[in-house]
Image 1 (spheres, rainbow over the protein chains, first blue to last red):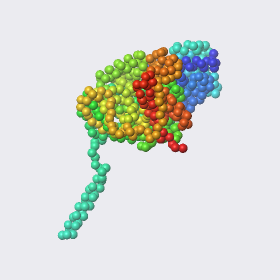
Image 2: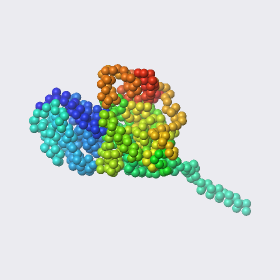
Image 3: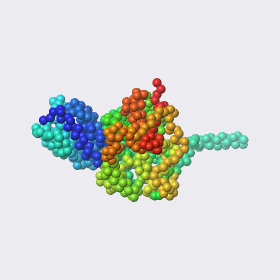
Image 4: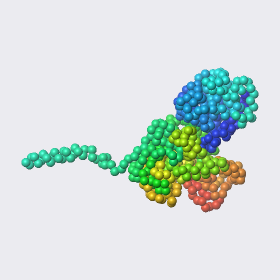
Length: 188
Length: 418
């Protein structure tokens, strides 16, 4: 299953993510950064979520140092939705309410519906969510890295669909004990 | 009788004084003011703001030639950065929002084929500005991997930043983005050429409805969502030109592509070096005052932005400077990002390219950054910010084959004396 040597695979995670994003953002070179950093979005509208993301990112940096994980803090949740919707970013930390509203297209997210997001992890109040296009093996590695410290981070085993938001197949694979080969980086 | 006359004179004087009590020079108005203000926190809430170009975007104000047009502008990123912003706030910038413009303003009497002359009268800066290093963006995207932000305190004299102590940047403000709306033929021609560029791997920016304003024209359900041009590239209509010499007192000439021209301003820079090499200058919102005139039928000659002035350029020159000359030299095996889209394997093993100004600029700039780090005790990030806001990257020769030369000139008076 997961071990720290899998960290090497996270680089491929970012490479594949950025390749997709090229068509959607004005700066091809800008994506070079998001290719090299596991970027997790938060918002100025929720500093509790921002602090929590910093803790999760610190764990990812310890478990997966080559991921160069980092928090990117958008000005509000509409911008988080925009960055996810246009594939400028892949991951975000959202409270249950924000995730539910974003997924269902409730205000202020009407313009972004349908949002292609899925749950990776749940601590009871916040989700780590990902675009559904995050490859299965990448989601598996991220889930495994955080669950390695699950006692401290207080993660729950997510149910298959909370608020209708599906569990990401990579996360599902981790919790069901499935083997996921890391070289399958281009799968969706 | 004499006493009565005296009383009448005194009364008249009192009357005269009292009736003119407010009649100092302030009361004398010679110009009509047309003011276009911001509304709401960001472009998405502001009916006077747009971030895409299309002739279907309606004017929000009208002005006659000679009127003083006062325009309140937003920062380039339509951000919420502030004096306490951190690098992690920079990396979440949403590129769909760049660049917000205030306008368009209908200039009465201007027709397609005319030239709009725009004289810059004044720029009043916000209290705060920022310079960002956004990884992957700017002239050296492969060399800077970490985000950085310099938060500047601004006044009408100079800018200082806690992130770059011991440096004072003089205000040399200008309109980073200023222009007129394209017409339908220009939209189609520019979309076609940029699409062709994108197909060969160039950095082309197709229409993006997400975050586009005005939403009813350029947004996801907008009437022209597939034809709205991004405001990032400068084009023949002006826009995001970032020319530091367009300071107060100069006059910008723009060909008009639609009746009324559709004049706009945005993305004001407090100060910038030639090159804006970090990707940002000292970015800010501002209140800009201009007046316009119309040069009838002159668009047959003025087919792209031109500008004219007097001694303003001299005032931008440094009192003391250090300069570094660069040539088109590089390491063997290196393909800098600017060349990557051409898929050129030929240049990879070379250490010298022929007649290449971009590579000469890279050589000059990176050498200047090394010099600033070595002699001023700066980090590489601080040095790049200084180069972006204060140093000029200039063409020196385009003849001495194969080594065309580019020189980076940095003012030395910006550093506090120790």
